[in-house]
Length: 181
Image 1 (cartoon, helix red, strand yellow):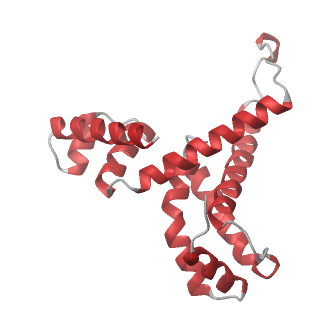
Image 2 (cartoon, one colour; image 1 turned 30 degrees about the vertical axis):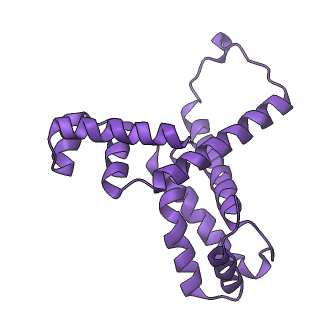
């Protein structure tokens, strides 16, 4: 992923304490990061918290930020790390009553795990950018269908379209995303 001139300028302004630049960076990346974060969790609240933590840390530690950084990569990597950390913390709460005697551990090498994580990160980043190119209506339809598991009838009602149009909309969105990936 390349740094855009806008990203570089915003980053430099944020380091100087410019709140407007910070807000602009948030506006540019918040939606795409949310889509990206939802690939790692089924909980929208965890995804939103992780993204907010990223931006809070950027603002909080702005004076110590690196001079030259690939802003997009940085935001995606830190978001992924925050979501995984928050997922791990929430899983500790829910797995207290798990019977571990029935589980069989799968042993994967460190390299295999690292390669799989990098592949997932790259694929999810591509998906997030492809999703960003969809219209707002298309993104909403996909969100309701796959994140909230709503039936076509309910999505059609929310979007104010017919059920057949809803099915077609989602089908075409998926077709478009497959082409881009």
